[in-house]
Length: 361
Image (tube, rainbow, N blue to C red):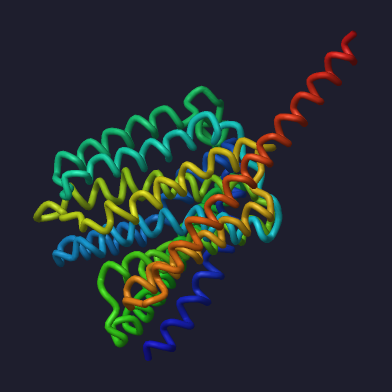
């Protein structure tokens, strides 16, 4: 039965993601809102709902490690795994609004979470701070000055009203399929992991984190395939912000007791999450796309991080050798590649400026 639910969950995820993307893109066009805004809000909130459900359930069961592992692991997976996979199906353009507003907020939310955990506990006050930051972000982000005919018209034509209702039904139906599919998949995966005696933190950082990120994975990949790339990038960035400020903030506020932060989380997992957010800066700014090469780099990093967790959990003797390889080869190579890419981008920008200047003269 576990295997059947596991497979059924994958099927529901694919169908739900396709339905959600088509409905969200149509709804954005009908309301006069950019697909980026829909991706950052409606789609991001919907695909983050599994994280909300899992985190609240774990908090009320006094499983703080699952809560933190789920959210931190999901944010790491969103950037390294989801953006990496989506970029494999085609370069992902990055909207200027993400560079100016949403990317700095994502980095700021990651740093805020890291700072709040340094005392090794997350209290209700910490959760309130996160929710206040979320409120300010949503207030600044939502386009209040645009004219949305579908919202401001007092009498909508019957055909248009039916179309709006159908699009909303597609969004809600797609989200429902995503949530149910992710839940079945996670339940099956956790059952498999517990059979092998894997710790709660590792389950949260890997299986549960990837499982609750499956809606984002399915949505971003399907959005990329359907050409709705603004939804793909907006979904990832928006989900990361909401995971920290909404999901973690709400969970901390509603939790019966403060959530204890394991030392290993502060030493390893949170720095990796902050690093994943920071690596988006050079990737997003250079040519404002996530290329296939950069997507493959993100995937390599995610696999490296997951392999480290597995080696650490099993107490492997190969862990010191692995750490040396990552520290002396993978990280320096990444820095070199990003610097070379940034220099090439700066060179292209200067050439374009010179051409434009020569044209004017």
